[in-house]
Image 1 (tube, helix red, strand yellow):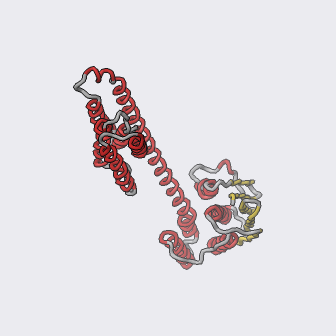
Image 2: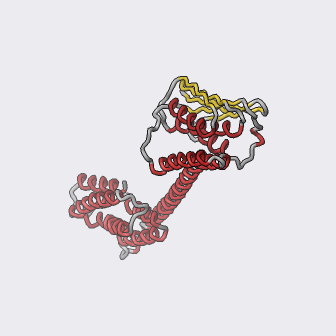
Image 3: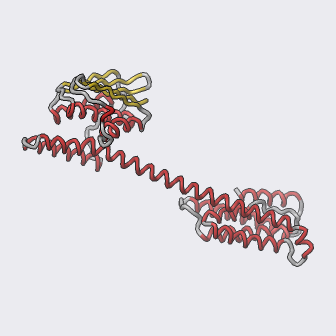
Length: 342
């Protein structure tokens, strides 16, 4: 932007009136175009801050721009705001470089104001002070903006890592930890333990390495597949009723994952051998209900260390703008209602 601003002013000055030495104007215009191409191509590398050679190039070009009007024989100060912008760009690397460049460009500015003529220097001192103030303010402001942006990127990275840890923890809880608990309960049946271990090994290998498999493409099929797995693992009967259907997109996958945890909880803790599942797609939302008529529990009394309800059910649907509701009465059973927007 600073180079484009300077280039425009140079071309206007060249077009408005003949200059005694137009070569300096054309040289500055050519340098602005060339340097713009060089720095623009350098940005394609995607580095976080400008290398030192760009700061040096900005300083040399800005110094030439400050001296070019006098050399070209015109009173038009056609360097625009580029010297100040060069200071701001240098400040991105660190405040030390910003102030160093500010000092160099200010010295060149002082030379441009004809140091030999003290009276002329004093008459233009206000312009010099204004330049120094603007250069300092712009350099400081850009440095602060850069630091703020770096802090924002750090916070976003930390949030992404936390979400990934939460996703891994939820998956391990839903699969590996549940299977280990089931193996402990079925430890007297060797064949059963081997079968559970092999099934869990295959599921974990698919999840870690993306082994191709017959993954359902629709919500209803995915729920029925989960229900069948739970029937085999926990020896219960899971009845699934589906009304409507939807493509298995991320929000739907989260709904299936939360529903799976709800079915596992019912199979493990309710004491009821008959679990009812209702899945519905329509009205701009996907809904899944899991109901048992078993022991029930007091949801408010569930400890904070029980991650199944919090992470694998509630938080999983909440990540996609969904809601969860748990209704349970001791001795009368439990119903978990899940909903995510399409």
